[in-house]
Length: 284
Image: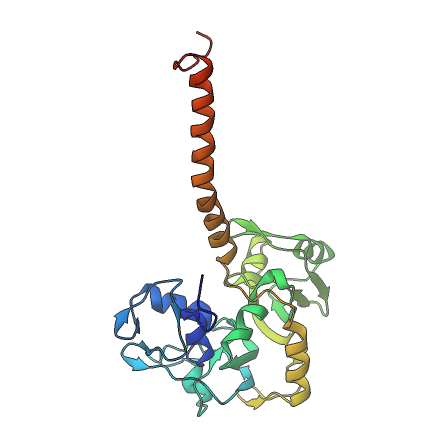
């Protein structure tokens, strides 16, 4: 049993505002995280007084809540890695440590949510929670009825088929699409499959957050009403890490193994008893 005051290490890191839970798992896997001076592992738990460090730097509890909306311009990369000259953190230059909720391709522009609240990230990103993201897309060919129908019905990319989505033609070369997924370069790959090339892509909405008339390259804090609606929208969402279900099923299977082994041993003993100690043979 876990101590009631302990939390998973990745959650402790994300709660500090250092990065998302998913990024924290990557840091842990790479051996860049220590707890009380010792290297940590995935699934480790920490107590409130434990000393957690990333690359030797102490991670402290975050007291300042930040939620901002950026109209990301083309050419900015959605990474917190400051080794990239075009990283979004340096571009925003916020006084608090923040990270993007999800990604927007470098050649794309539009609404990007940034925060230091690690708890909310997985709840927004997981496709199973069905949180909408809306885009305006310009392509190099006429948007036909057949194109709209096929885009909305599901396209085979990245060894899967995209979820059904809402697609609407808004002009000869533009369409609107609403997704509940976030596959890598999803819209571009979907268009490429149908023989189209994306010329311009702009995200205009994430759930209740609308880009509106925010100028390209500018950012603003979310209003209290926007933040309340956002929190209400995700309060019942599954915020577990992506692989949590897989881990849980594996643990359940591992827990069953001793009982299965005991059951097999009991069956063998019964069989040996009924056959005078000999195993029954199958048909020759």
